[in-house]
Length: 309
Image (cartoon, rainbow, N blue to C red; front, side):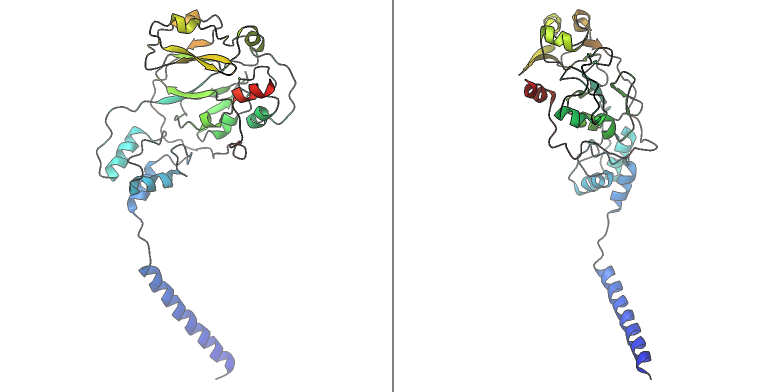
């Protein structure tokens, strides 16, 4: 038998032996996957938005099965039916009572018509860059830049920048995950109970004439809203640059008296959203927050104003 044939035979036998060893080892060392993880993952929205604090829906499912999470309540996009189905998979009773729906509202009405334009901004149209530099084309340091950090952060395609330069929320798509709230460097978006009827549509902290100069509908910190509220549901939150009204929704009854008394029309009556949280979106948009590289350095409106002084 020639050396070549011998070499081929030896290599073949070694390959068969190693293959057999690997096959046996694979079966002996295999880690069993809990089938409940796959079942729960299928019941979660699949958008992988991360608002629950986990890397994605599969990670959330693993946390539920392992006991790290008691249920799917942290997933804002999960419907009541699916939450109950997940509870059933885990052998638990269904959740009792309806889940309160939370939606983002914008603390700004400084649209292109109301907000004084002081420059023809030609820089990068990015909220984080604007917050770090000139603050955008408008004069108010506390308002919306309109460059869409919130839009980029939304995994459900629920936000767009409208013709007036402000973000518009499509509540038929919004699940209240809160990613847009975290993305805004101006701290303008707030998750509130969807059934509430009154909202402060301003974030300005300056008082009197400076506030009036910056925006036609800015809060001037007069405090009339707080004084006129029959339930004492409004307080003036003091900051380094001034104050802003804050509504305690546990006390607010939605009478709208504050809105009617506000001379600047920055307290407004809003239409309650009565529809349930939307079901799983058909084509969730991939998360691409433009702030990823800068999120640890972004600054609030108050800090920006202080730096400019």
